Image (tube, rainbow, N blue to C red; front, side):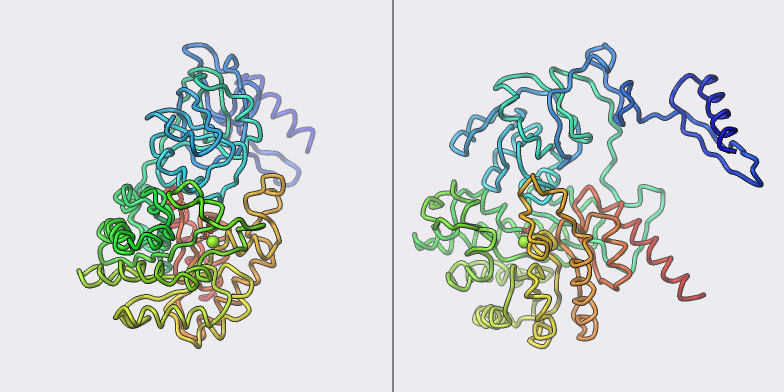
Length: 483
Ligand code: PEP
Ligand code: MG
């Protein structure tokens, strides 16, 4: 039968003389060809990529310069602008291709001008890679040598969808997927809420187009980076009010775009190494490992004026009718942190959990271990920050390209934590959600729905796919119950 299958395959190949996708079936040793159609996703080298034409020439003449990991899909041709450090960021003109060692959050304003982005280092969960996805700017990370190989001013084509950089201007046909719900001709309604991750107020309308059930994570750091001043610097200059107003304006834009839908804002999570280029950033302490250093809620409780300004911004939005804004605390490891933050919120005139959705991010193994106590303390929801949770559970630096192949949110240790936390939260009536990058992975969405998660947040470009995966899993679960 195997020989027969090979013979039929050869006949089809001889007939069509191109790579074919062949479906076959077998019954009692007899082979049946069910369908044969051309493979449209192969190039001449046999590698999976779309058809590339170099100014009318064949695709094979387009020279590949370097490859990396897709951070944000899309294709773009333009001139390289090499950025060695943040002091050179003003070199970026609109439409340039930003090439740099490692994208950091304080590069966001320059990224917004770029036509595409290529980095040596960084992975899928690097903040700026996430931002490029949100802005819809093609981005390739982890090329290792882009800053050595690409020359300033050189013309290149970035095929970020496939993680390839070509020399010169190469025309690449891509099928753009529209950002809209129900692209399959129907409106899919899921019992699990499908939300979006959203950091840039200026593109809130684009995110709202997804038809998402709300925003599962607003990162304040991006607004802060755009404003150019470090939060600690506002306080040093007694400009708490300016900080509050800047946040209020940004969060307000997002809250309006998602009117009557929950918008969960995370208190600032500023690592000491990532925002050095902001005004006052040079005063940040030097730490051996900022990832596990002085940031998030532990820092905010040491510098409560920053936290107060953030709460105040949200309180004023509530007063103006935008009561859809909720708040969550990042990097929690102790019940005391939640207690202290609640106390400050009450001083601002908002009763946590009653006047406002008040949640905790689960992004440390510690938070998983103390989940019962966190629920007892009283929280409206938890949201899994799987980027940090995976980093800390597996002991894998999320920004280290060399070990990125080991970074996997589907590791049984991480899944065990998620399952346990959901189980405990359900018992206490605390809602569960995910806002880490893994929320955009179909297999993670499937797993979480099985565990009974209440909502899933995905990147803007992944909302449609995740919605479909969730709908399928929910249906399967229902059918299993009926049997
Ligand atoms: C996370 O850790 O999963 C998360 C959402 O936070 P960040 O990526 O900003 O650390
Ligand atoms: Mg985190």
